[in-house]
Length: 257
Image 1 (tube, rainbow, N blue to C red):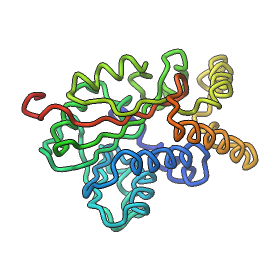
Image 2 (tube, rainbow, N blue to C red):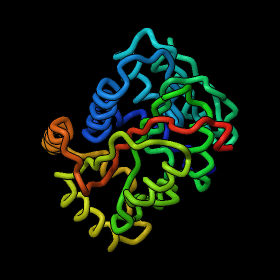
Image 3 (cartoon, rainbow, N blue to C red):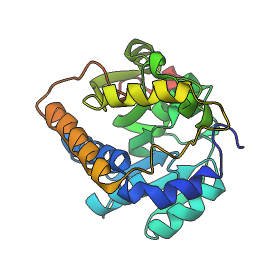
Image 4 (cartoon, one colour):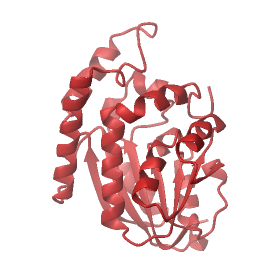
């Protein structure tokens, strides 16, 4: 057990991410958002890069940008360095981050919910961004979806949109886009949570949602592709298992910290 994460999970993730519908679909959403809302950038910091699955997708789409992946746990960085040898990686506690106007884009993808001091981290991110820099976030949402999966993942919270929006604005950001995803699959997700709720801790398998049949995996991937289609049309989906937030630095870091 580490601070905010179980370090043995990195091995499971590294073996399952590339073929799992959720990780693949989230990458599509992230890459689309970056292309849509930040066409010209020269530096990108990913906070909590884990095994480097998102970092790898960013490198493939933007091969000439300065790309830095950061992770609290060295165990995750071991996998990330193998995946993307032409990126830079550092071990970093986002709560202690000292960058000042160093990156035009920062991404934190399903990271903020692991950190008790999320308000502090948002302010540190603001300080690390260049003028008019962009922050891309994904987080799990809806407190009523809390389950054993959240406990196992060491989540501090599942966000409501109003809570997240308030924290982001208080940290000196202007919201550009906020939408749910994992929307068309929400009934399936809710059913799975209800089933897991009735299981004992000994019967609960934290990796069962990642280990599904290839056919079901492909069907679920198509559902999430449909979510992205709706988002591309400009529809901000009101509910869903996760939320995508795109925000712009509005306040100079001197005013924040």
